[in-house]
Image 1 (cartoon, rainbow, N blue to C red):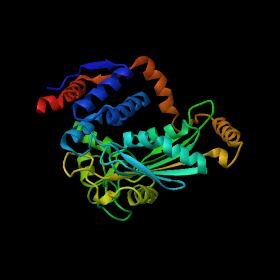
Image 2 (tube, rainbow, N blue to C red):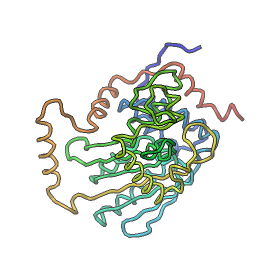
Image 3 (cartoon, helix red, strand yellow):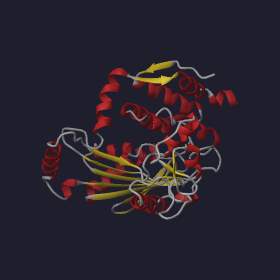
Length: 342
């Protein structure tokens, strides 16, 4: 029986619980640490659905082999501005962390650089990656393809993923400008979790199998996600699929195994990143950017993209987070999952 009890966790507790659960399900520390960091950061940003709520997916996929928790990614520079990383069916987070020094060096040496992760897995919060790029003084862009969720414009059958993209622009004395968005009106995980809880969804989130807006999440999962901005969202999904799938992959959205559930084997999706050294283009880029930001913020009720996340960080760093007791117990169970199964 479900309980209404809750557990209070500090952000350090979130990291430790996540790390222990991932290791308990078969990930080594090199792979588990970056993923645990990303979950802690998602909780700090106030986006639970890709924080602790998503950790069971990672754990189940470790146990069933959909993601390889022992993978050791390899990378090489194949052209002056190109780095290719084979994630070997492991986590995108650890493959990116392994490669970022080389990737940043390529960008600084050439003014611009690209990194392609191949044979990868779900990226999680794509803004997490570009913020790390921006912390090095570089402009960052990221693209991640994912399994089918959005129908092509005029169609009714899901073909493209929710395929997110993110952008981060560094600022000298403040958080970067951070834009992180999917090609759909909301992340698919929000519809999945509404279905699991028996809740309705806004009629702007999903379409049924006939292409009609629906408030029933189960009907939406049988149909497709609503593309953000109509045909423009579909176009964005296609761009991401071509960059992250055709150049990365090897799976495109339409032939990648689903992130939901444990069947289908590794999804073999890809991620594509671009890093730009702004100093190679304009020495006063920072002043121009700040002037634009200041002018925009002169209007009432205007905020910078990503600012809500940054405000949440200070709040949750001080107050911690509250977690449903049932989910806490489930996550604690994963810390011993392999020893129990053995």
